Image (cartoon, rainbow, N blue to C red; front, side, top):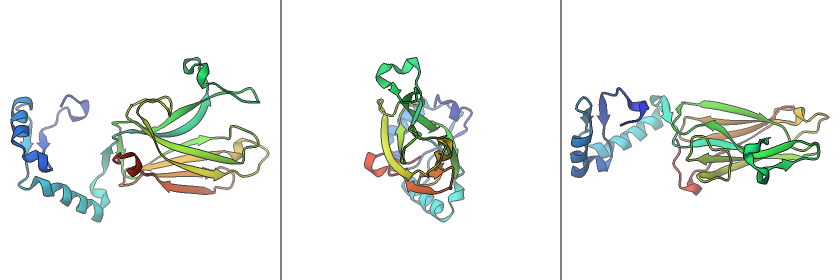
Length: 210
């Protein structure tokens, strides 16, 4: 109730089987401000089922979701001293890179229906034949690395890169589409606009979608 996102709320709607608990009822009586009206449907357990059915028929009934995790992908970015020498990747052309967590949506952020976030990247090596993008979630709002505590891999995509004289023309665009019951990830080439697409699998990590 201290969250800034619910500040000024007038109603607290309880749904699900636990909402019928007498222990919860007593707790709310002593902890909920008197100006906040608590609403308990006659059949709170069925409220969730009914909501799921309504959403299946018409997804637009839910316009905004709250991101439960931070979502992003792995991306090689310029190395900084804060990263430490253990994370330094020194390439043949002299570039110093570090494998980082590139954030698409932060934990707690409002995500509208069919919200799309796009990032761009180029191959690390001039003769690189393919590009592999890995997607992650994190329990932190601002994760810096894909291997830090709270980060979990949820999927990956591999794209064959087109032949070209310049690295920029062999680059790719990475896209994540949020807001629905599934999260879609797409990797698209700059030069010939080829794309590969996947639905990120949250079952294997026991995580719930947004």
